Image: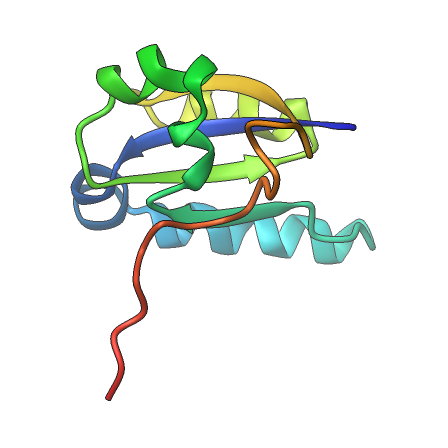
Length: 111
């Protein structure tokens, strides 16, 4: 099993109110300069929140939510310092209750 760390917030806050695209672009540049493989993902309506052990976390976050998930705790701590109104935590996957750490509950809109 792998430990995944996350920053969780409402989609409205993170994707509309915060200059989050700039933050991600800055981090991509940093990874590129360091020749580091991307180890973070943006997931709308993350499915890991449906796990029974995540119930209290889900209740604290306005819906619809979005998470940045990473295997790098330092990156998540860095994000927490950049963004104020977010929740952070971790989980292990794959597990019985979280089969896919990057799964989304968001339904794709077809054209």
